[in-house]
Length: 70
Image 1: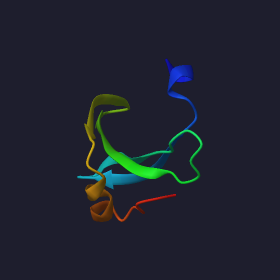
Image 2: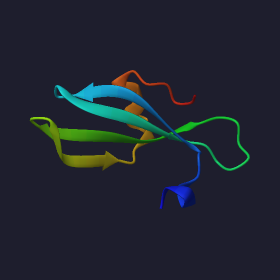
Image 3: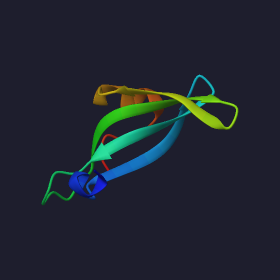
Image 4: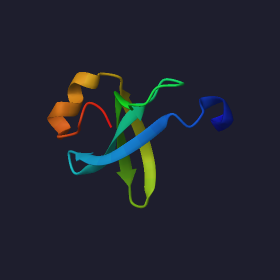
């Protein structure tokens, strides 16, 4: 699966509601910039990830103090 996804992805850590989160960035094949793609929120229970929520809304990056491009 990961081979098919390629290497065009980057993550920047952030947080939401005292839980870990990431800004997910994607670079088009042949492109030079990574662009905001989605915010990924992790719900943690003890030391385990209990749930993952993905919000494919690049406009949310500003609310998390994340840049629109890398």
